[in-house]
Image 1 (cartoon, rainbow, N blue to C red):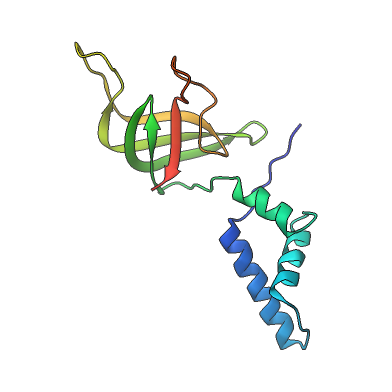
Image 2 (cartoon, rainbow, N blue to C red):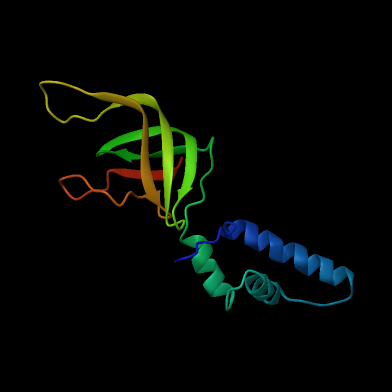
Length: 144
């Protein structure tokens, strides 16, 4: 079974490295910023800073209440995350979105079908594994 660990965003990891460097400086230990980044990487179980940066940088960090934008069934939206649940081994998350404005998910001129609250599954890249008939992901979510 694949184990997905939650890793802080890159910006937070850099703040951790800065705090570590300042704390050690107060104890009389001189440490460069690069050395502190390497130490943070080792604390998180990564081989080096570049590996940790890739692990953290390739994941979309979302939480309930975040403002987001994206596409749903090919239609652009802006909205808010109302629910977020990790599924199975952690590779997928179930997300519930409340759109600011209802989205018409039908492309035919003869009728419409509007959605304002939807749920779907997304990976750590913010894209659903399921696709529409034209090959585009059903749901794409990005921070607003």
